[in-house]
Length: 139
Image (cartoon, rainbow, N blue to C red; front, side, top):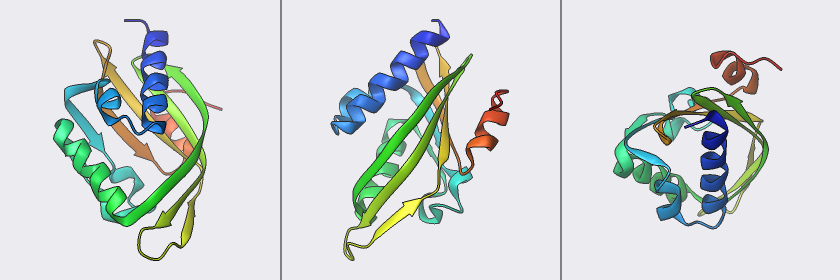
């Protein structure tokens, strides 16, 4: 599968996520996906772990929405880096489930690694530049 096809997979998954169609999102994941949130330890310490398989990713999101009632963000860009796709995120806000207090995250990046048209790994990077360096891209 061409890298441009991988970009399309990521874009479709993000569109499905915006509709909260988690079954469609999960369709982009390899059964053995590794969801690595350790890079975002400073941003979201309670979720900084590695989650494995579809059930592991669902646990991640279940834990996220146990703490937060809403989530808004802007996809700044989706960049092709061969077997990896970088998604740059900005303007993220979420509201505490019980406090209704809004918090914001600084711009960050996610890196998706592909194999045979499926996402096999997801990594969070608290700095966009760090993610771009990790995949061999520069701004």
